[in-house]
Figure 1 (cartoon, one colour):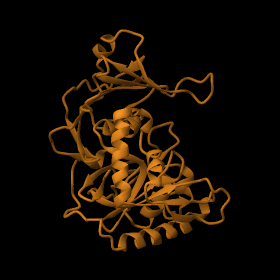
Figure 2 (cartoon, one colour):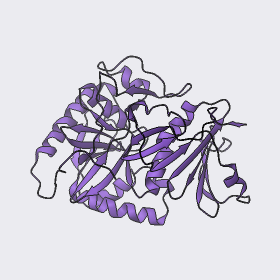
Figure 3 (cartoon, one colour):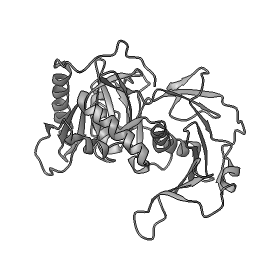
Length: 354
C-alpha cells in the first residue's frame, strides 16, 4: 500500500530556485531549505500529496515499457521500471524501493507517492536526483554526471559514473574553503562562445569513508534519510560555501580508473573531438534519452569541447592520497583558468537563468 503525503494541501505553497529554474511544491521539500524563495512563476509544479490515479487508470494495461533497470541478481526485484502512459504523454517511474513518480513529457509537472514504510525524506532523495535530472533532460538541458566547484568566478567539474569519487574530490575543495556549485548533476547551457554551469542546491552527498578520512570535515554528518548509506554536508551553514550564481565552465576532469595501482594521481589532456564520446558516457540519465534527445546532447557536447578544456584524471585507490590529488587538481585548474584564450568569453554577470 502506497502512502501519499498527509498534508492534504494541493496548493503550491513552497517555491525553490534550483538548476536555474523555479519549482513550486505543495509541501516543503527536505534538502531545499536554503533554496526556498518567494512566489514566482513556476517552471515545474511538484505534487507530493495528490497522485494522479486517473492518468494510470486511463491507460490500458500492459503499459508500454520505456526503460527497465533489473535487480543486482536474477531473482532480485527490479531497481526501476519506467512506463509510458496516455500515448506517451507521461512517464511513470516505479522504483523497487517503493517510491513512484509520474512526470509529463512537457517537463512541467511531477507527482509522487511512496510506500507507507517510507517517508517524505526518502521520496525527496529520488526527486532531487534522477527525477529532477530527467526533467532537465526533457527540457533540452544537457547535464553532466558531475560535481562542480568554483575558483574565483569560474567553474571546474569532476565527471564520472557513480562511485568514481566526484563528491569526494568536491569535498576536498570545500574543506579547503572553495565553494561548491553543484553535486552529482551539473546543468549546462550555451552563451555565445562559453558554456555556463548552473548551481544545484546546498547539500553535498558523501559516504562515511569520505568525510571520516578528511581531517577538515566533521566526523559525523546527518543521513540523507533514515536507512540510507549516504550522508550530507550542509553547505548553507557558516563553515562551508555554496555558490548560488551561474559560472563559466572552464575545465572538466573525467575521472578514469583504468590505470589501477598507480602510486600517484595524474592528469592528461583529453580535449578535442575524441572527448565527445567520453563526455556523452558521463552525462546524467543518458540511459533515458530518446533519439531526438541524444542528437541534441551530441550537438551540445560538440560545441562544449571547443570552448571548455577537457582532461582525464587518473586517481589512486588510496583515500589517504586525497590531499595530494587535491593539490594536483588545484594547481592544474588554476593554470588552465589563467591561460589566455581567444575563444572563451566571460559573461558580463555571474548571474543567469535558462
